[in-house]
Length: 187
Ligand code: SF4
Picture 1: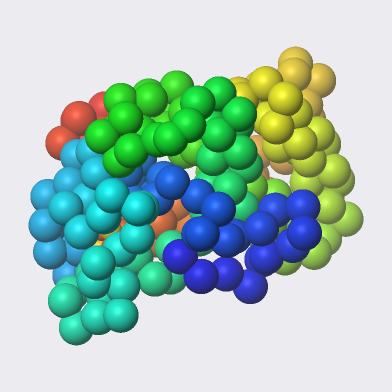
Picture 2: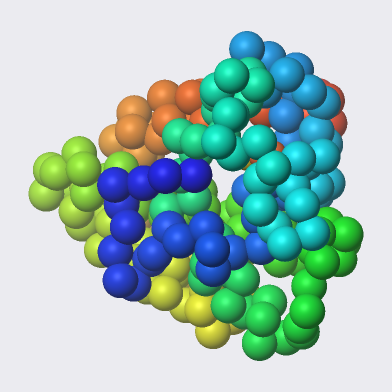
């Protein structure tokens, strides 16, 4: 929930979000999240104003995965689209807005890849990030992550690079946060 990736274009400002990470993501009891939380379900610590009621004692309460989580600016962008569609949202309503929650997961993953590619810093990594940036920007208009055929082909050419960057990040991001359905799909 904090970030060194905050930019004017992709703010990681939780006050502009609807607690999307606290609703969209799934968790199994783990060292960093001592509770079961299916995806598309509001965490029991999320209040009606989309604030975490244990935020000042997350670590003491065992929720150590929460503060380091970074949506890379996906949350406020999805929330802007939600605000344009309807107001006021409640946590229960957000939990049923599956297309927005799917969009949040997809956009957060895409933004994570773009940021990681920029950080890797090689010419190839920047070239892939340059191809992906328009897809992230297009989300603001469409509400969907869509990778065109040329970009998909370009990504296949750089599959080894992308996998080397993304795999450890996804493993860290999903450690202890897969629901049973996802575990089954991945096994
Ligand atoms: S403990 Fe707080 S920060 Fe973590 S998921 Fe629940 S409401 Fe969100």
